[in-house]
Length: 119
Image (tube, rainbow, N blue to C red; front, side, top):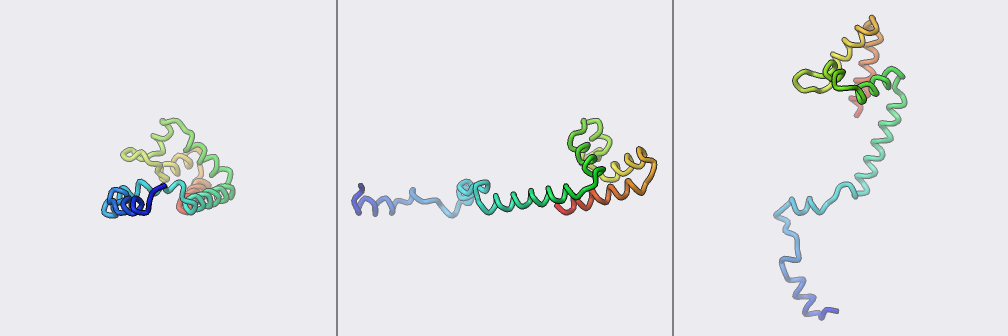
C-alpha cells in the first residue's frame, strides 16, 4: 500500500493524465461499439429495416436479392458506368424490357425507392 505522500506524488505527475489538447487520444479511448446507447440505436434500426422489408412485395424482395447476390455482369448492366453505383433508371428499363409493361415496373421502382429513402 502506498503512503499518502506517494499517492499525492503520483497524482501530481503529468504523465498520468491524458491531454485534452490531443483529441485523437480521447477518440481512441472511446469505443463506440461498446457504448450501450449505440448498441440500442443499431438494434432498433435493424428492427425497423426488418419490419419495412417484411412489408415489401415479393417482387421487391426478389429484386433486392438479385441486386445483392448477382454476378458482376448484371451489376454492370444496372450500375452507372462511371461510379458503378446501382442506378434505378437502368433497373426500370431492364424491368420494362423483361415484362413488356411500364406500370408494374414503375410501381416496383417506386416501392424500392421509398424503401431505400426511408433508411
